[in-house]
Image (cartoon, rainbow, N blue to C red; front, side):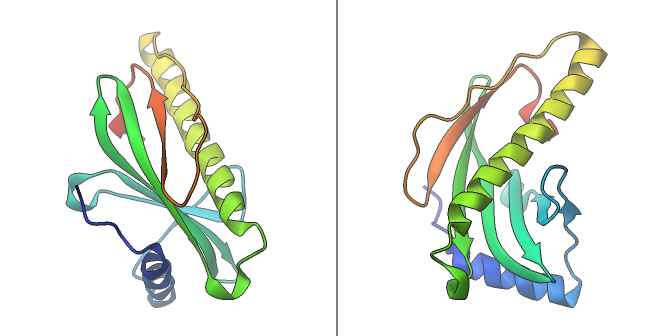
Length: 147
């Protein structure tokens, strides 16, 4: 089992990288204050969503593609909120918004795949989740690494 990442450290490192200009994040489609960074550290797909206001990272949600079972991709999800602004519902907000953005990316990729090949199945939405780390399933016949 991989070592658990401290997501508060990740939030701080992301802020430093944005300040230094060593990382560029893409603006998300649905939520104007949400940014996404897609990378593959250690060969694993990772999507880091950050709520950025006036250059300050308020919160992050990190999705890491874990071992797939057949055509079902599994993501680990972790999140963090800047200490000084906790207790305002920002954790729930970043998780909900980042899942919406992730599915928006999936829908765009799926639509392109349908046009190209004529076939791609839909999403299995997450069931109940709880705590700081949860998982959900994204099931389709398209290449999941194509995000």
